[in-house]
Length: 466
Image (cartoon, rainbow, N blue to C red; front, side, top):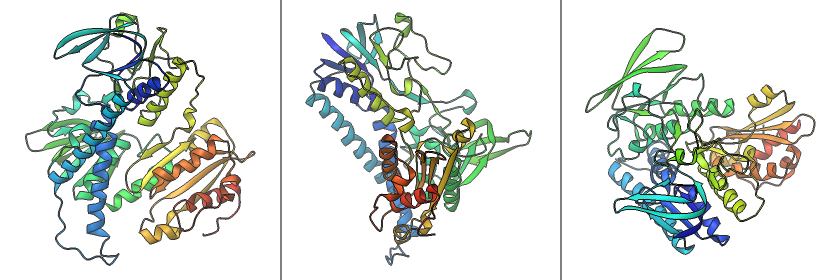
């Protein structure tokens, strides 16, 4: 069988790239090693974690907030098995949706491990044996997997990653989360809301180290209200596990003093690494860099003409929507179009509650680059809509150029900011100013009014409601 494009990997980058290629008239195939499509994101990442985040938030509200709303409930309990079952239903429906899209767009799906024989011949190893297909172009979209150093003694039972955490069917008494990044904080907040005692160990001196520091400060303040304990500037020196528990040994930076934390589980969430196993890149003479990534040029083409790579296996943030945009870019490039991605304007989101969202430059980045800027902030506690919904934690921060007033970065912690951030993204795509943002009429009462107020502060004018 001869194809115009073969995509290896069916995560958001891979399947979206395949769909776009097919839409552009290219005969397309996709290869996936697992029996379900969707990759990490749909199966053991974005989708299932958001399902559990929403379920845990419903429980938390029933226990802690319904009474304030005048809703009396008794004997509220967590049915963890039902919670996991609902999560699995969401995953199944979403993966079946991708399967439908492949059929709709006449994309051939192969199940097995895809590897290079040459740049134009791909071998597919499956339980039924091996077959080979021919192609003009290839898109590598094999994603990433959790980093699990030997020191953690990762056993998938008591020392776990996000993959196993999504299937815990009994609320743990205590959990240690190693890593104060997005994955650790999201899953840590799930179990904290369900009643688990959660302790976060982070080697850096702040959580969410890649985001604007105000975001980490606001989220940590909010998570502490859930009872989460943070050990910043601490590292793990060892983990021992039994069948029913584990002991995590922790050491403060610049100190020889250690202490043990005993828990039901140790969740290792210190990052992810590119997954290229089985691709046989050496057949093409391709090598990965020091972080395991496949080097690509500005068109996401590798050193081998006609072989492209996208998503978590290349440079940049490991984000599903970043991979999607790259899949579209490659498909359109192959079809002769001239697409473009502004990586500075790819937003980042943390789906805790309150949510965290960010786009553009952080204040730390602007300071480091010597860019003159002005900052405006507005707290959600001063917003009528937030008081009405009892979601007063967090703030919106707008950073604008001191001379031109162009918006350089927007950072938010608060209710539904995962959606609100798109106002900032859209305006920044058109290089709007803070004044432009402040003069847009925002409906009242809404969470988006915090954006207008922060923009007013950034222009040098006083916000209206503080």
